[in-house]
Image 1 (spheres, rainbow, N blue to C red):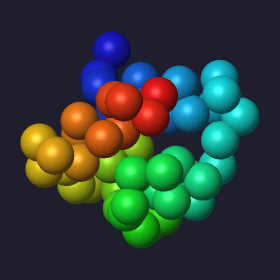
Image 2: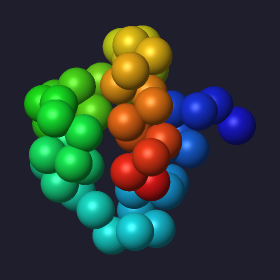
Image 3: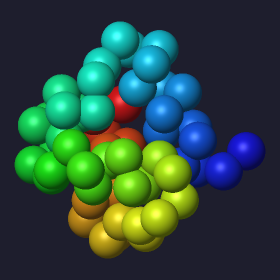
Length: 54
């Protein structure tokens, strides 16, 4: 499983919208969407923040 699809799965499990996750990690909603659709590779710092949030 790709990490990106895993982010979407975990976000859904915790009933979070992209906007809510973006607020939690200080990113834009569009950035979360791009990560989930494999159009953007997050920085190590952002990936860490997402991992901590989920």
